[in-house]
Length: 84
Image 1: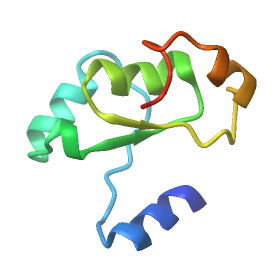
Image 2: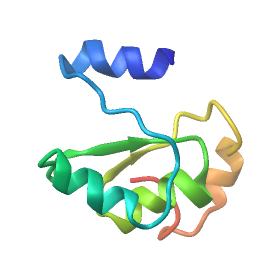
Image 3: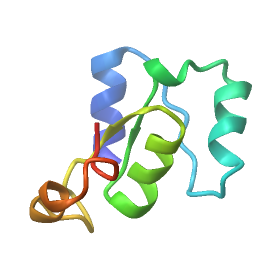
């Protein structure tokens, strides 16, 4: 949506948009597109799915507070579950 378009314009890169998947998804995408986890970000509105997936894969994680997770929940989350 609009967040993807904003990142696309700001980065001058074409995004790869996928739905949520299992533990196979992130390693597959990193390998298929030759992505460096330390230079790749995942944007998602849930700590327990999107942010967890990114953290497990060593990606930068971005929580835009546009959906399920509130700012209060993000600040209250243990450090190992919070976006980084």
